[in-house]
Image (cartoon, rainbow, N blue to C red):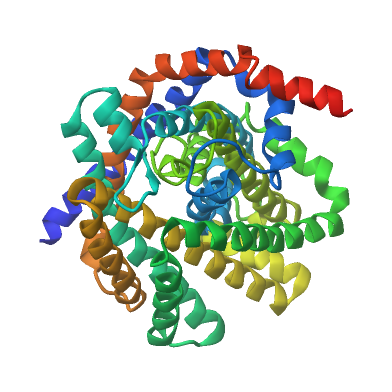
Length: 461
């Protein structure tokens, strides 16, 4: 068994190296070119239609508001990786990795836009009258390849079990280290919290997410901004490190062992594509339930999630780690995941490290809630609404099992099962990108959508 697990680990390690980074990264670049660099061309409009329209009533059909769909999707992407993944990118790729993280995030907006637009176009109503959609639907209906849609759904349905276990275990471990809280107690608390939210379906998840996600993001980013102001004099140096070493290698400094440009690109790309899930096919499942009058409009909302997740929250972590110099400390390379907590503790004392632990707990619980919804929808696609409800309870139970450290053998399959959903989704959105381009052109040239929005804005001014 050990030899078999060793082989699985090697295969997943290879897949999540260059192959999938290139597929996701180059796929995002290709879609950006195919869509005419529209995320740059319409940047102002995109910001007004998302962050500037949070409290406006939505037109069209849907189960939840566009903002609720966005925050539900963000609940999944904003997680432990935002806190512990960014320092790892810095330690192994150098400060220049942050530039490449930003670059691939902006390119990834086209992937997120494409998959969400397709999710709205091919969505359906389930037996309970809720809108459902995602890769399993647009692969089946758009490509007429049901076997590939089933592959995606089965892969994600399975992947959610070890994923929720790993997430729950990270919370239980952090709570034990910080507050000496027994994993049994933290596991029970998490299981009850997750169960109370997800059993209410997407409407309850949406209502929870629209309040909880902005709160936890504001708490974390707000604290990071305070640290940034406390170290304001170092901001030019930090920016110099990020931009200067994106294109030239960096020599060893203190605890940092140095990094070549190739390492900066590799780690920056990896952190960018892993943090915002652009191209993974998960976020469209949440966005498919949104109330909207055109698929492109919700695609635009999905893009704003990358701004929040990568360009704001991941960047906040990067600036805290770089401006406080914790990345230069001796031994920093041995435990990069602890650097964010060290940076906060350096400025706020024990309150700072507790704040990071609390943020980690918040982020992970919100991630698990959305993951359970994603898994339920895969089971629903495969077995109907009854099958979805059964799997929902399996996932909620796996939260408690994972908190206790159970199911560790399943964790070995986490990365390889995730790869099994990324590949069919990227194939689908690349093959169906022509349809999305037509929808995009229709939206931005129609008197009913973009031109109407522009005229209304001009008239109100």
